[in-house]
Image 1: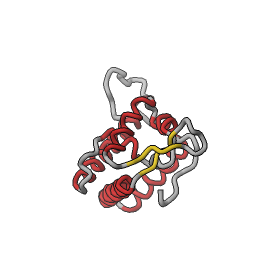
Image 2: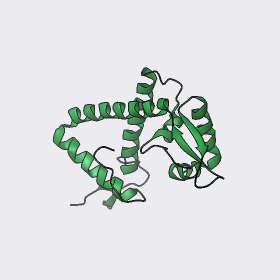
Image 3: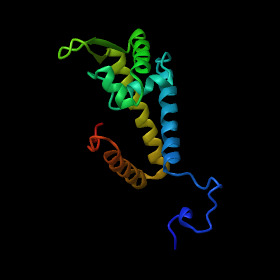
Length: 165
């Protein structure tokens, strides 16, 4: 028995077929992202837009140089600096001189930025609790374990996130 319709000799490549792993992961990601933004707006962070979430996403921008964050985000330094400027004007972060390299800056979250980060984690925990209820404790734990292992495979450091991350 073949493991997938894609290995079936009669497979029609012009038909979209079932979603592949990228589409499955994207749908889950988009659901979480949309809930994060709606939850932030409900909590009073209504000045944030989707693009700002890319800056604030795990593990956060704290103490990074803009060039390091741009590389992590796979975006240009110019595009990132535009977002950093917006977030700085909105009071979520500052860019301060780098003590190790006077030509560079370091990103630091303000109390408002740290509070928004905490709110994001709270919102995602709510999503996780809902998904655990829908999937069941055992299946959700298995999903989390598999995604943690995939994270370790897919990230440059190869280090899985800690239980508190």
